[in-house]
Length: 395
Image (cartoon, rainbow, N blue to C red):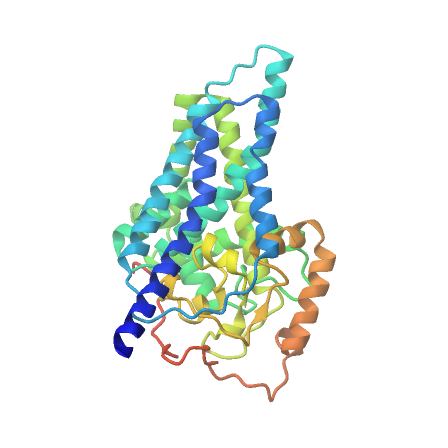
């Protein structure tokens, strides 16, 4: 009887976790609804920014979640979930062109409608392309399956940032917390300084990594062997995508598409900024303490486990539904929604809060020589402490 009760409780816990992860559909489905029901009048367009504001308010008020996932949690429901999110995001990319192509600019009122639609394009569609599109692509590119890895690359092409698939896996993960990693924000570095530095540096790093992989370090870009260069492949696909948007939907649709893509890129690099600010690695093996994370309940379920970023870097092969909570890591002052806004809008206060947290946890520049560097134990008696790390989804 007790064994049956325990199994039932375990099943209910797994079901609860899956249902909560369905919150990840809120942002992409809201964005798709915006495009499907458009074009909108100027006042209706502005109203469509409210859902993202609501998510921000809920996230800031959300309690912590220290739940640890069970090791036997089934994978297939979560795989179906990210496949569905992939399909919705592709639809969102396509609907930018379809909806904007219906806009007519024949009068001053039409101009006002176009300008008003830029707000939800940035606040709703652009942020969703970052939160849903890039976050889902991030999950895919960490998988060994070639099809899933390619799906991740396709989503990144949609935001004109395909080289992230190369740089993140083979550059950022092994070099996290070192001076060689352009995606690690340095102690004291402002958000503006980081974004200005990291975007070109990551592209350059990805380009060089691919040249090494295909053994073309000393070849020209037009060498036949460069056809295997993934970053070059991505650039060609991105140019083709922009040409297709312009040809089928017009220059105005192209402008809106670029606004969405650039917003997504900006959000991604802001996420990179808050996930590693001020931390420096002192061990060969990447540990959870080498990354920031948050215990926020709402971030955990709406962003497919992104809040447990520390465990992701320590065990990169773990799927999002199995990421664990660690108490020793540096914690963001809020969930991702609130911390991102603070880092962008009031960066000085963000850096003060982050510095205080690093000092409290004795991490980054405040680390002492006698501080423990062993792998911390997750707060779960059955969770495994070690697991081989994936360094590249597709060799």
